[in-house]
Image (cartoon, rainbow, N blue to C red; front, side, top):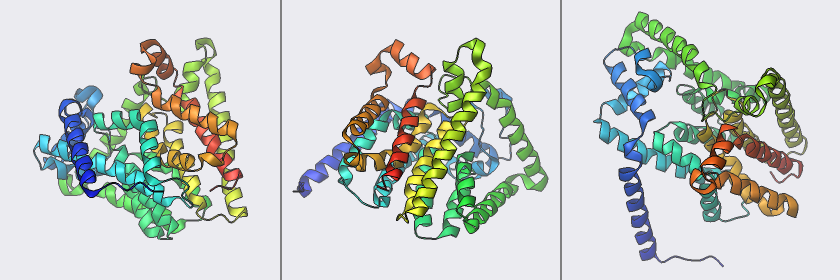
Length: 384
């Protein structure tokens, strides 16, 4: 029997929720949003025709592509504090929409939307929190990629390609979908995305002119090559690359690449197996599970897979919560334990020493290798 909440109670709850998020912004988020300040500064600089990439900026150097600065120039037209608050609100709205759409995408909905959204938020809260605190762009990218999946499911491949290409302006993460689209023969999608990306590279011409645009594109590539290497061993790097280099003894570090290559091949073969089973069984919406798998590969396989980038697992978490009761008992409880570890691995809960051990060794990688196994098992059992 579905619990019905009176209209007046719903209004009170919404008001309390709005007040809560306003207080979160005023007393916590507003003090930081350092990554958004970098984006805002990039927008200001491109409006004034200035160089985006400056070594003097240090750690807070602009690293996004010049086309992304064209987008941020719209926010830079606003006062900084106003733009920052709008960005914060957009993160909350986009996060909610990503969760709702992930639920909507499910082929069979075995649990209520509210239940899945609440548990997904609890499991991934630390990732969302850090993302919002920094004012990052990943939540926005996730929503656009989720819209891309919806477009693929409705066979609107040009629209899907538009979404795919737009995300490449900000981060190259969505390139993980390129081999998949080629294997699925989604050539219109790929062509559209490439055209959008190329056109985007010319958009800064409005501010720099053609010659100036070539100069700024070269500065961008130089900035990427110069700034990437020092970040590979940072505390927040939680990629497969970082995991093997952290857990192996220093004297055995040269073998890390062997493990990385073997693990990547195993993950790739598992994914190909999922695709083969989905096609052979004629499953409805096989792309949903396959997209969820690829979303997790974004932080897992990226050399700079930041700890909070695992919020890209939204779709995977929604799927596994939905189908949890279908797993054998020992696997169901194993999944619950894995989710609990992901959710409670906070310094305030584990203590400083345990938390440092968990993060410095990139142990979240193990949690998400387990999640990938459950996605594979879901396909083997034909749940999705």
